[in-house]
Image (cartoon, rainbow, N blue to C red; front, side, top):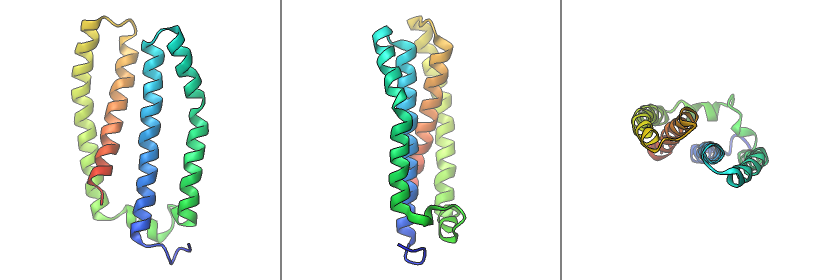
Length: 148
């Protein structure tokens, strides 16, 4: 498809695919790090092997996204700039940032309480990974939910 043939719905779908890839990557990497920090030696080794495959999966996903988008996915194209600067997209981003912030604040309190009661040895690292993963996942999920 050429740039003239691309309509805004196709560009929004391409943008959503990129957000889904980012969400899946964050969840995969965060889960792997939590398995390394909390799991036993066998589970940590399996998680390390799984994390080695992360760049390969990301490259395949981004390649598929690039094949679907063609040359229109370029951020400098006027059509993609119009989609990204759309007021519905800006509203969805604002809601996503707000929801991600509040999810991070609630997760910090909840995870700190759980880790202090459980007596986890690597509590600061576990808390950091879990809070970042929850906050970013809430932000991306909220943007995907609220966007058109």
